[in-house]
Length: 238
Image (cartoon, rainbow, N blue to C red; front, side, top):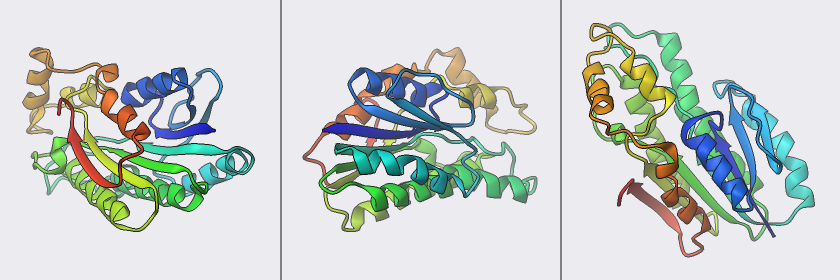
């Protein structure tokens, strides 16, 4: 039987590296991102804005035929896509941007978690991986949108795991400091606008950033581990 992985943010970084690896290991991969992605079959792609509440239904329509006419032993969702949000202190935040950032980082992943719980084929093992960060548990001035949304996603994963969904497990995985577009964006801010910018510049200057393909093993292992049930939390290197 086939294995299907749904991955958000497959145009770059961890999402792109994971999609390529899973395709090489025999998975079918369905990717979502703002930019088009060209990968060999059986890769499928939905170019979309995750802030759009219509996206889950668009994905459901695309998946319906796949799930109806193929037998799957594994269904996995990797909520990888995220935006750093505003790099501003309270008092300078835009309400519109906060709503948008929460949609991308929290509402969309929750909607996709709901979707796979609803559409999971009978007898298929369901694994959900929410890409997390240490900032889900530690406040950093100027990153309220990001910290709060990631904390919310961590709890949403715990709730999903606490419900009775059969052969299902959830992993909240903090991959460490990875060289992604988000890191480049954060380093480009000014100290006036983003008080914590020096933290990210120092990590880059000290060569502390990991390559995306260095942090994939815990994700892949979790997706294949038939013994897992419930909620798990892991940081890269553990």
